[in-house]
Length: 361
Ligand code: SAH
Image (cartoon, rainbow, N blue to C red; front, side, top):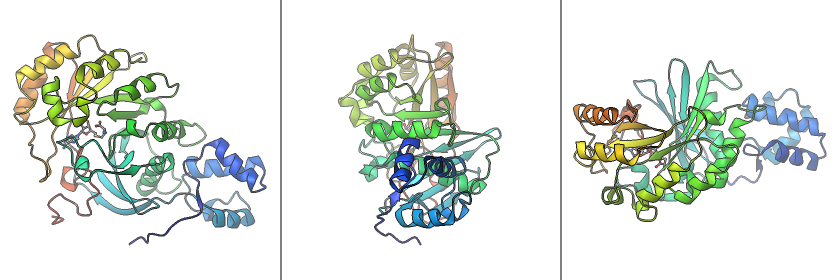
């Protein structure tokens, strides 16, 4: 059990190189010490001062009095039979969020949260059921990557291959725009974690004005749109936010979104049995995305007892895909990961049990 205490020391994770320098200079230290501290935190993923042996002992003692590297603690880890690990993390104020680690042969993917809970209340997603508690800070967002990599590979240890980041955990990242973008820049820094923005994908339910803002950013992640319905009638029922930003406006923002060479916009389409999975919707989707350099991820719905949906059967998903293929729209059927530990898309609700049934079976 971790204790919840009110932490008054500065949290260092989340500070930029400049901010760390200011912090160190304010303590009367030389700027090169700031560089050492920065690299200890982000490049070597050191979370305690004892291992920062390139810093003098007196400085480490002083730092320990005034600052903590991160308040994020691993509260529990659930391991799936497919190798996926769900991390239940506790933040400095006792809030709980989740991150999911998905190993693959040539890369790992870490799915991270951007808010504690989520305000959007999409009818097919568990996170919406718990509502929004608060936004996460850039430091808290980045800390998930540091803490998860440390748990998996050991503190400071090199990682064997590429790390992809998907901002598809709890929360709507574009409703926490500034902190999310700051975290993307921190992840990208070559002096630090060095995870390039092209390996970071941000998924949004469609906060249209922020998509235009994102288009103007110099350093920006790849973009994925949780579409899941090809028209307003259906999308209004699944995504309350669609009433504010309807499909036509969302697609217009996507059309004007600048793409790098060979980059595609990803559209996520959660397959809901008997709801959005007919041939008719597939044809509508093809027409809707016509002219956009797009790919579609078909995601079998991950169930939870609280959610009134079931996944489309695999035969229906492949029939749906066939129509997209004939329409010239590339698509992929996603394999659900970590379903047995409530770690799959839309199942993140800071559960303390391995499964939604709560029996831990
Ligand atoms: N708020 C953001 C990111 C979180 S959701 C967004 O909406 O995109 C991440 C992805 O999980 C989205 O594509 C969403 O449509 C999908 N998702 C949500 N609930 C799901 C469920 N129960 N089963 C499968 N996918 C789900």
